Length: 461
Image (tube, rainbow, N blue to C red; front, top):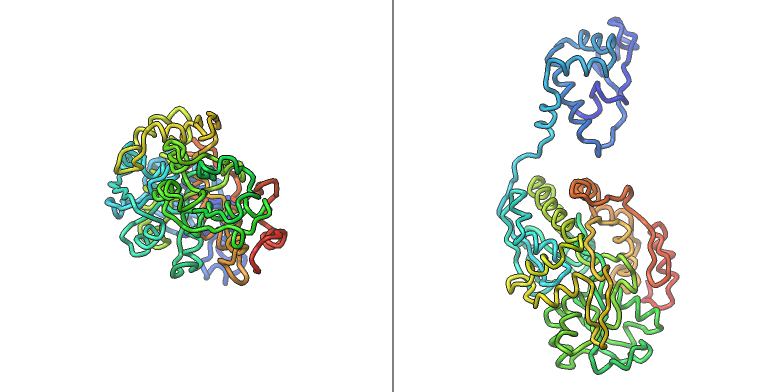
């Protein structure tokens, strides 16, 4: 039975007036269209299931349509529901009906890059979040983002830690074959920094950076877009005045030490490790460019989401539960211990604690405190996706007309995440889009093309 023929849906209208007294005409009676309903909101699944179970019980108690309809007509739907509840355990039946089915695949492989952005995905293994939800997950340390992408596309990984622009790029076929991908959870917000070689400690003004060589983790990354945004706002053309190259995060500090690059906008722990090793200093945190920006995501193919829905649901719940745990400052030192071993991030606990607690040395002789240096909020705002696509378009990665809203809603799945956030004790937004400010400039996701046109420095689009 569909949600459109449920006699206990208050939006249903009983039709009356045929020879049996219940339809307007005999034609309507013979068509057996007993209930005309408007669609009910799918978010209220419990009520929908309750109505479905109750309707099935009613049909069993009153096999004849006329008797069933007269019973409801005389008592009214709510009274009829209360009456049958006296004889049948509707609540227990509803819970059984609404319970998820068995997990289709318990043994999973999830790839990650060894950076603090992957904290929820990594910590969910040693801290038991996957097992709690019936999964046996092997989290696999991976060398770089192109490898993560390719192994996920080749189905060597069931799901993966990805940079937030990657599922959009994969879905649109930018840099790879076009395959629909989903990003139902943001792994972290903030958590990046511009780090410069210690030899440049007297060159804090970006106007002195012409000719510098910078590294970012991947072409399709928030790091690339935020660095380009920052440079352009300082009057530098990212494609003409500096060099930007992609480097896997684990190689960034070594290249800074070897003087192959002048700096990088990278994820942690690379920034703090450069300070720890005495080879670099933190010029600014990425939150100083855009406070609350997304960084990495939990991603999976649409095929995985749709063909193994119960596995997907258990995996997503595990990650959101881990994210809720990581969101609490009092848990950060414990997490640093859990993710520091060689098979995970392979960094000194001291380095990870400085990042996760927000009390850190900046490499310039100061100890800074910023509780929001990195945070964990899983909600995949679809306006994040729209902003990402404006920057892909701005810098020539996307051509032609783009349906920004449609692509963002296809990739950044918000409905399931909001429900699971509420269950995990996190506040879930009531909408999927919002405006935000990047370096003093308001971004309105309803006007992406105007936003792109407003920039002086950009590639022709």
